[in-house]
Amino acid sequence: MHTTTYHEQRGFGLIESLVALVVVSVGMIGIASLYGQGLGAGRTALYRTQAVYLAADMAERIRLNRRGGPDYGGGAVDNGCDPIGGRDCTPAEMAAFDLFGWNNQIAGQLPQGAGLVQRAATTPPTYTISVTWTEVGIGPITHQIAISVPNF
Image 1 (tube, rainbow, N blue to C red):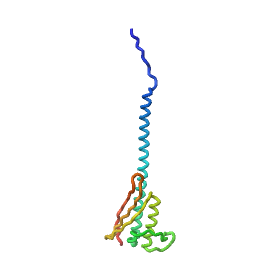
Image 2: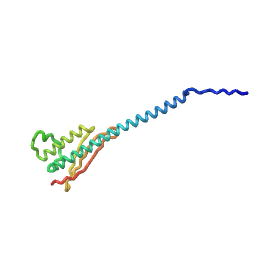
Image 3: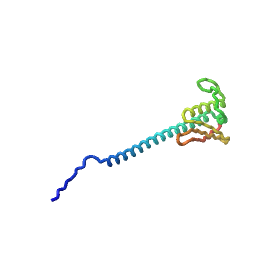
Image 4: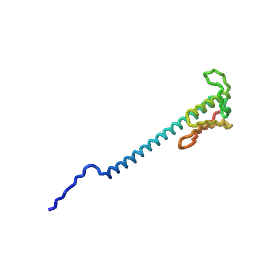
């Protein structure tokens, strides 16, 4: 008669442990990669939101100062037209001051941010407002809007 001896297996073998370790390691690397991409996408979304807000802010400034419209395509000057100072400014001076404050906001909120307003002498005048910044890993990005503002 034959006697069969059964060997009872206890615990994991070395190969099974190594395979499990590799599988868990690959999964953790994948999770870390997704987390990094999520952070980058969140940063990009924040910058795009700020650019939209800043472009809309300049559009409202132009709509409020229609007489200074042609001067929004010019240079930015800190001429003290701040409402707190109580100085009476011409529409052209206010346009230059608006550009100055707006460019400072862009530089403070966006990495390597810059703003540009271009005016086309159409009827009604059309303004193209551009906000540009540099995104890590992507390069320069520009958000642009165009508005038409009748003189009166």
